[in-house]
Image (cartoon, rainbow, N blue to C red; front, side, top):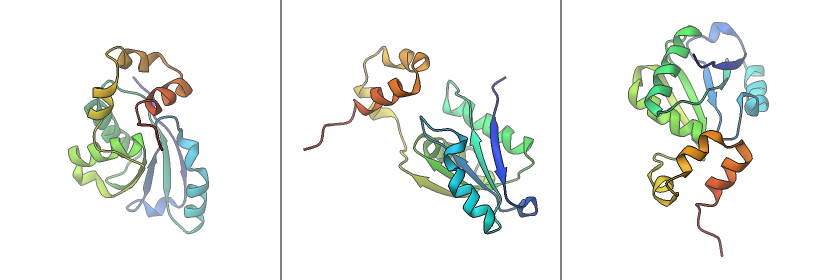
Length: 146
């Protein structure tokens, strides 16, 4: 089994209105520290989640659905940055009753363009690559600026 880790701040009596933060490709749960701290001081409950890698978005969505059950949430507002936003959109599509709202930052809807422009061996390499190398591989697929 893959492990989900998270930080939680703010009052638990706000159980019906929590915000779940999902990080991007090279991020982690602690990248939302300042946002979670500021929102908790205003009375909001915030969970910043460190999610494991899965083979498919469908597997990730089912596991995130189980995470909701594990932390006893019926639904939540979800903030997704980058890859976290991509996954949040797929989760909202599969489990709309779990999502009160989506907040997306630097996100995308599809990975088809990346797959089309990548070499065939890239997918296998991504599972073995450390984050900085993976980040550079992704950045290399974008066109160069002026």
